[in-house]
Length: 508
Image (cartoon, rainbow, N blue to C red; front, side, top):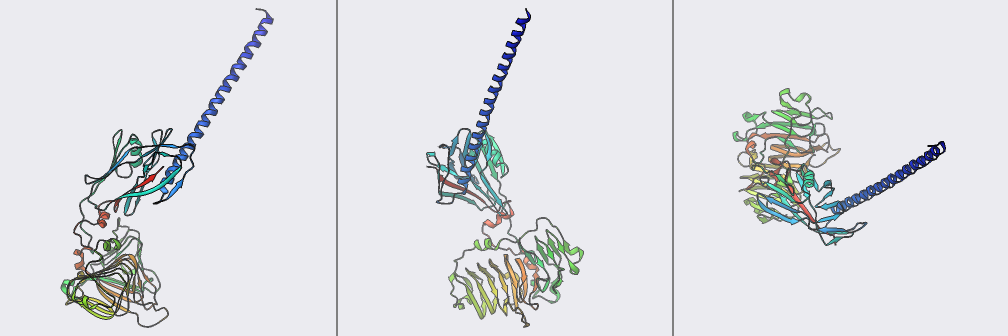
C-alpha cells in the first residue's frame, strides 16, 4: 500500500471514529435526558399522591376540598378492612383505592412500586390509641373531595382482644406500615393481622397514699405555709391518742421539694415519700423514708373518668333551696350550681349527690351516718367553718368520698389581711386528680387526698395543709364497678382505650 493511500485511509478511519463517538454521545445524552424527565414526572406524581393523602386526612365532617391534579385517578374497590372484638365482627368494609401508574392510595396507605411511602394515622397518647383508615367512595377522582360521614369504633373493655385485619394485594406494604402498632404479622401475601391483646380485669385501685399527686403536680413547701402528714387507724376510734401512726405515703410522678424557703414548715410522720423524678427532703425526712426515681409511679385515676362511670341523673332532682329531703338520705342530682350555707345536715342513710356544676359549702356541717358519695363536675368551693364528719366516730374516712373535676378552693382569699384564716375540717377521701387545690385557709383532712397540684394564693397566715391518713382506706376502692369500665384500660393495656375511625370520603 502506497504512502498516499495510507494517509487517505487514516483520514477515513479518524473521521469514522469521530462520527461514531459523536453518535454515541448524542445517544447517551438523549437517554439521560429522558431518564431525568421520567424521574421528575415520578416525583411529581408521588408528591401529588401524598398531597391527596394529606388533604383526605385533614378533612372534617362535611368539608370539601379541591386538589389540583394533572390527570384523573381511577377509583376501584381496593382492599378490605375487618375489625373484630373478642371474635365478634365490628366492621367489615372495602376501603376503596385510588390508582395512577405505579402509585396507589388505600386507607391512608400510599404505595409506590410495592413499598409504603405514606402510612395511615396511628396516634398513641398517654391514655389512648386511635387508628384512622379513610374509606373512599365514588367512581373517579378528578380533584374534588368531601367527607360525608364517619364510622367510629371505640373499645373500652381492657380485657377484650381486638384484631385489625387488612385483606389487600398490598399486604406487605400494610405490614410495613402497621408492624409497630400492635402484634402485627403477615399472614399471607394478601393478609395482614394486627392484634391488640387484652388482659384480665384488674382490681380497681385503692386509696393507698395520704397524698397522691397527678401527672402535673408536686409540692413545694413555701408555696403552702405548712404541710403536716401522719396516719391513724379509724377502727380504733377518732384520730388522736394511741391510734396515731407513721404509716402514710406521699406519692408524686414529679419532683417533691420539702426544703423550699418562704417560711414553710413541714411535719412528716410518714413511712415514705415516692417520686419518679427527685426528692429534696430538707431536714424533715429520714433516709429510709425517701424513695427517689421510683419507676412507674402510679397516678390517680382521672376524676372525669370516675364521674363519667356514674349515672348522673339517678335519684331525685334537687333544687338549690330544697335541701331538707337530703337529710333522709338517698340519691339526688342537680343540673345547676349548688350552694349550701349556714346549714347542718345529718344524713340518715346512704347518700349520693351529683352536682352538674359548682358546689359551694360555707358555715356548714354535714354528718354522714352511713356512706356518702359526692360527685362535682365543676369547682368545689369550701368557705369558712366547713365540717364533714361521720356519726359516732367522726373520722371514719372510708364512709365518705368526694370527687371533683374542677379546682378546689379551700377558704376565702384574704391577701394583705392578718385575720385568722378560714378553717375547714373534712373526713373522707377527696379525689380531684386533675385539679389544683388553692389554699386560702387551713384544711385538715382525716382520710386521703388525690390532687393534681397544691398552691397557696393567700396571705402568710393561710395555706396549712394537714392530712391524717386513715390506714383503713388501704382496702377502699377508688370507684365501684359492676364490670370493667373504660378507666380500667390504663392498668391492663399500654393504651387507655382503642378507637378506630373510618372517615367516609366521596371522590366524585
